[in-house]
Amino acid sequence: MPAQIPADSVGLVTPQTVTFPAELQLECGRSLPGYTLVYETYGVLNRERSNAILLCHALSGDHHAAGYHQLEDRKPGWWEHLLGPGKAMDTKQFFFVCANFIGSCKGSTGPASINPETGSPWGLDFPMVTVRDWVKTQADLADHLDIAQWAAVIGGSLGGMQVMQWSMDYPERLRNAVVIAAAPKLTAQNIAFNEVCRQAIMTDPDFHNGRYYAHDTKPRRGLSLARMIGHITYLSDDAMRSKFGRDTRGGKAFSFGFDVDFEVESYLRYQGSSFVERFDANSYLYITKALDYFDPASAYGGNLAEAFARIQAAFLVISFSSDWRFSPERSREIVQALYTCNRDVSYAEIEATHGHDSFLMPIPQYVAVLRTYLQRVAEEIGL
Amino acid sequence: MKLRRDLAIIADWIAPQSRILDLGCGEGELLAYLRAEKGVQGYGVEIEEDRVVAAIRRGIPVIQQDLDQGLKNFADLSVDTVVLSLTLQATTFPRQLLLEMLRVGREVIVTFPNMGHWHARWQLGVLGKMPTTDALPHTWYDTPNIHLCTIRDFEQLCADNGIVIHQRVVLNDRRRSTWRNRLLPNFFGEVALYRCALDAR
Image (cartoon, chains in turn green, yellow):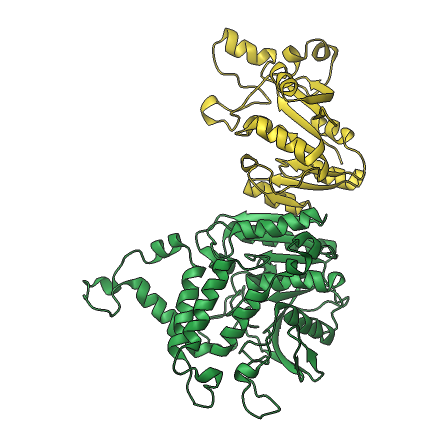
């Protein structure tokens, strides 16, 4: 808990929920008999309803992008460094909306929700959801909030994929698209990491084929292992070296056993076990699959520029030098496709040591680029 | 909107409503002018962080990229004109970059500080020291300009590589074109501006 909520924080926020009772047709061919979204908003929607910005979260993120739910909270929302009054994403100018996507486990409908047909949790009976489905539900939310057009849609990592999908599926409903540390599709290596994570979960004896809720347990070891693997890919080699080096825990001598010797082991174990407390293993399976399936160019023979042909939004694409999960090269593919189809696109490659996680950090050049771009957006819509 | 004299000449050479790429666009002043005054669709390419931010502030689409890594992300003939303003001398592979520009654009506009200028010759030939001029203010040990050339050198490069010069303007140290620089451009010209294309086009 912060001794006092900082002046540049949005402060206390209360999540809201909305339920859409109509059947939702999904890309996989199945449907959901209605669904619920949990979301948060920051700032004030202006009278013209023109200053709204949608934020799209990543794999383990949620609707809680900034501020605190209660004073006792140990940590603020995941984008606290960049989102707040006077920050790069300025809540004094814009009205931000961030929704937890379906298939996740933070309040929106997902595999841990109750299947109305059976009265018990969906588990693996939950239909497969995709980035396109998420964007569809976010468009429903925009309708619910009476927002005809977003001033911008912004997202990092998997969030950046949703931004691209938005610009393709609803070209007239966003003026700007900000894609941060993302990729137009996953590489074989990316998919391989995801598959190892899924196998870790699914081979855990407590997984019970996804029906662990009924057994009053969860695949702790599997999910924790998945998070440890994921976490290695979010950090750079340099970041790990400077954060942990080969330091031993508490500076102790080697144990010559298999308990924790090194700080990095201790850190990963902590990341793994704390993740288990806040995340549902089935959601992890569904979301990593959505990541794997994302490939808008595939319907156009692999030509991303053709997939982007209907886009109207102006783009800002940002990558980080030490990000090896979604490297700058992947962002350049997005830029190249936008250039090819004559769209306005700016691209910044930020020197950063934190790897993929850089998109969460207040790196000065990153902040400057984002702040300046959004300032321009504000001017263009007359804020 | 008032442009620096050399940029104004470049702007004159660019067709309205055309699509251009401005390599080493700096803070995007040329592109801002061309977008506003001539309806040009343009992208800047810039490596320096502060300049990228400044170009974004002007609302210019700018791509942060190192010209020394080439232009492979830009397709053949994907723009009408590629501009390289006062940057050629700071690139690692000027010849390759020039040829790359001619691949990406139908036409290229290249401007550079002329090392054949009398003041530079005076400093090197008589005083025996590396020249520093208004256009080249850096000391030899602290300069980004690693491939300096004269007007004669550049025209030789064009001739050797099948590059046709469509237009040339040479400006003196006050960025003006006078009878003296027209008569002896390689002696009185401080900045040279060229509009070129490949022979076959």
